[in-house]
Length: 191
Length: 371
Image (cartoon, chains in turn green, orange):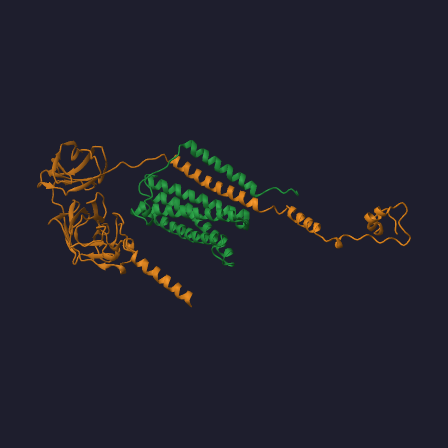
């Protein structure tokens, strides 16, 4: 058996690698749909690459989160950096989930208008950004330094909401998901 | 051809950058490490340059089995990077694997940084080009062991440097004399304590009638603490609280039937009490963030997309398109007046009725008759 620390390194490399490719692909998607890049054969390719790598990274994310918690020194969430890592990774998970579900249920229509394409690419890029920030926080926690240190990100500060706000947000999120899901599957007037 | 050249150029630059970025200028933290950290500190041994540092190990002349002793590493002629960070190893082999003191049957009871690691990092002060660092170790078996030391540090142009002792330092472990006052064989000194709290230290000994407890802080001033006996060869003392993260060193002077003994200086580091947070609140907020972000993304995407794309059952655009086509038909293409029957209009039909319904009459759909 390998230690949880080694397993965490493996899973985080999978997550960061997959999300990095997804980020590049979503950037290309955005540039293509905004007309900045003019390559007629690229959109379907980068569309598939972006969503496949995002899905792959998303699948590896829970393993990275769980192994990270078990491999951290001490017990539980004993550092503000670990808490921020948890928040960032779950936010990235949410962005990625929303992006993938939209693409799955709405199909190519997510690219049908500029507004929709920008929103879809932005949600994918937000997922990538959150995951890369999570990895940066991990570097700061383990080694005391990270590539993103030049931005002086406040990893030591935790914005913890009161429980009732978290519960409200959770309920609102679930309601939005259910309503949006129903809206994506409208009942036919023919039937 | 030009694009291939650019691709090769970019890949080459990336490969070169990986060599420059292989070292970890911020250090790797104190830990149990094999020589070269198994590649974790400086990436790959092949990229290391040879350090000019001179390393030498020293120890007391007599080392007894099961009794703590001090191994001191002195490093001179140090040249470091701008971070002035160095990493020092205590090793028992130079093969790069199974070479820690633990692998040779030695236990590290205390290191200079307040831990029990064989790899320690130290930040030098500006202008400092030599340092000394100690480990308190305990042998579990008789015989001789050869110790080695190694150093990792940075240098100019981000190159990593590596150096070792030129020759091994051999120590011989002897059997402990009868009735020698000493710490208990299973005594493990604490290495960490919390800030703002006095530390009660329990000490277990063997063949000891009385002990004196001494401790010193960074300024080197030695103080004594009163020791209470809590039983046969069992003692307790209290160290004053630390007000800021710092280290102190302590030792005990043991008296008994045998010759008087003095233990090594053990290092005790003070750190802030661990950070605490309500884990339930954190997990709840984390899931709230997950569902909120997913919900917002899907809701907005559905809204923007449904406005732009009609349902597959919505035929309104097609109908409108056909209507527009009909409206734009030229007069010549309008439906022609049906031909008038040779026998004249059917009985009771007006001219207007024939123009409107004459086609149906001729097709046999009106009134069932034929022209």
